[in-house]
Image 1 (cartoon, rainbow, N blue to C red):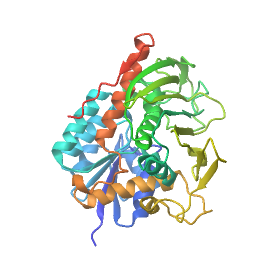
Image 2 (cartoon, one colour):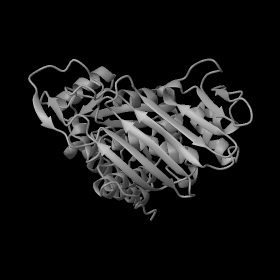
Image 3 (spheres, rainbow, N blue to C red):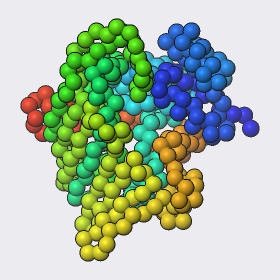
Image 4 (tube, helix red, strand yellow):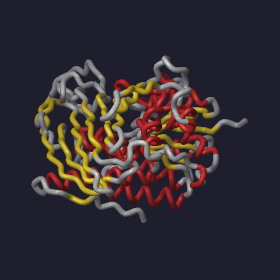
Length: 388
């Protein structure tokens, strides 16, 4: 059987995980990568064991052996790279956020719909089996509705003022930093699991570290050992935020997001409370789902193919007691994406789990509402989102 050809643009931190996931599928071939220059692309190609490299993303998109483009570039390049791929008739898998802002995201959403190709945004936490288990339990009425949705996404990799990357540069990362980077993950997960849309928000944003020190180049996320003379750079994007939420059915919510909180490595937590029970999932303990009751002992459901719902079993790769990881959840999203690609991107063939450009556009609208709320002095703002 002929393999699907994949090309990746932007070989930074997450690129290796995209390549690892598609190689695990078995029916996808990594054809080429494109970087900011031919020399940097060739270096990355050697590291990632990829045969072809391009110094211009347009050349990669034009490669006839490439049917799918993975866009893992910095945010300011999401629009031009993805737009070029869509107009070339290629399927696209893009990292989040979909674009720099909601206007660009809407343009990509509309272009993807007109192109009729598969279009995916890597809100990869959806791929965790127990996330899907929680979603199914809520949809089946086991929680007796949803009254409160809350949690946080906390990291510490930007605690040191000497850490500076393109995410702190609004021209490259966008106006938002923490909310756009990881708050978008939390909000997508909250909507996906609860089955409810965020209707309005009230946000309080701050920049804990307003001056960072740059070595003159934008290092990869989570990298260490950057050396050289540094210059001070004023940072305006938020690195800490707290947000109140109102959902479409009247449910309330709250979450905090930050990337300057020592000891929190990738601390994403989501809890959904209903009338009958509560469900809580922690990314750093992702093989357990906490179930809370008021009239009987609380319980913990372990990730186990013999325990999860039938429609969740395809997302479980190992028997109970065998721990699965971030990379396995990422693989689940990529696997569903390529199944959709194999069906030509037909709407009816898309998995319900799979996040699309529609979800990416909606996420940008939610983040915009939070930024507008803070800019207006901390007042409620409706999420200005159009499904057409």
